[in-house]
Length: 186
Image 1 (cartoon, one colour):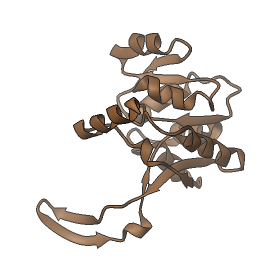
Image 2 (cartoon, helix red, strand yellow):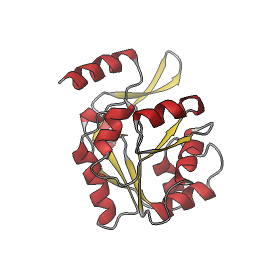
Image 3 (cartoon, helix red, strand yellow):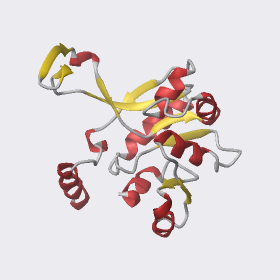
Image 4 (cartoon, one colour):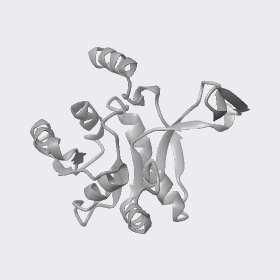
């Protein structure tokens, strides 16, 4: 998955920083010898902070991407970068939600239906001006957010949405792995 994810980012990035679990740093470095590989933190937020700490001083744009979204099309990466180059401080790919979404007040008890026309699913790579993302991480409390866009929004920065892709699905469950193998084989 790491190699697939890196290959989708390669055309758009100069420096690739991989944040890996401490026990897998050597393995990740072997897979991607041209990348800078660092050990992650205890949380996503901590891991991204570790990655930010090794960026070159001249880096202006940062893409934060999950290897679990190994098949994001390069065009989605290009859309995120284009939004940043066109003046956005932060940009994230999104796709419409197609399922009916219900609130659950407690297990087994359904609440109201949420209007899915107002919902989108967020994907990666999330893109930021480096200074904005570094500032958001500096000001955040540990565990403040589930993603970097939320940290940036917490300091008052607008996050722009760009079109994502169904191919940027997240590989987290066994069925996702079946789909990933199919995509990789095609």
